[in-house]
Image (cartoon, rainbow, N blue to C red; front, side, top):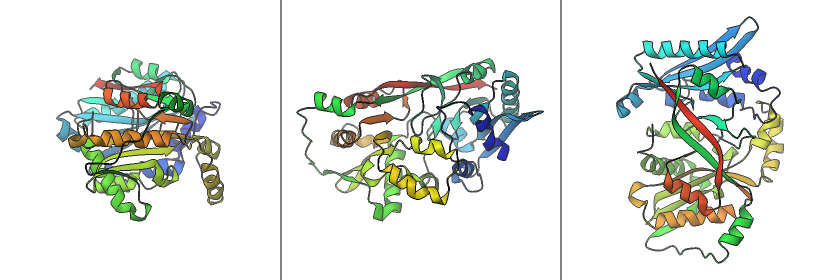
Length: 355
């Protein structure tokens, strides 16, 4: 596991754009004894070595729940990293393919780190410093993946507006917030009722995203596990909940772009760092629109208008707004980002091959 976690530091040591993930958080995510996502799931970690040590790594994920829901025996790979040695990468991907085939998988797709609601895709265009929750990799990775027999099966992109205040003052100069009516209200996250609030958000997202590509409903345990560090990267005002007669029907979840704070830590955080980080966090003026979900029964209702209004109000407080990944064919999501002037920024591909 040390070799698995340590390899990226060899690959990216001279790359000023790379933001090292917190090693403790990555180890926690990949602990199949503690992470409830891996309950009943086959998780394997692979490391390729040469005479000098580790040179490539990847994980495989075989989830019977996905096979049952989709009717397809697809295995997934993630956390792929490789030095610039195509032989090492090719051997690694050959071995993981053999393993997944031996377990009955008929196709292999990725990268998913480690699933569909985590970081996904491989960066293929615009290799600038990433925002929080945005994958980053060397430019030679896509070529290595394609040469190993994979083809692009899904395209996604992120968006950004670095002049939000100017855009809103010009485009929405005479904008007036819509009234709360017909039983619809908007409020921010209640920190004093955290567990119940997280459960309300989970229910909204499970309903809203149920028809998304590769989506699996999140269990209560999975969502609590994934949300453990949530308020290290956000605050209650960045999470807006639309209710209809007191029942949550839509959620806007934004997070702070904490990458400039994480980069100097080099993957390790000490107790003595926490106070300084909390002070620095207050000065962050960049956010990432992390998730937006509206229950299917309310997607053409006033909930959309109120959620858009909540986004406009938040955007006025932050000069720079990024999005997380958006499917190229998700017209509604694209139009929503255009309301606050967000334009395409980076492009990613998910790859797959038959086994």
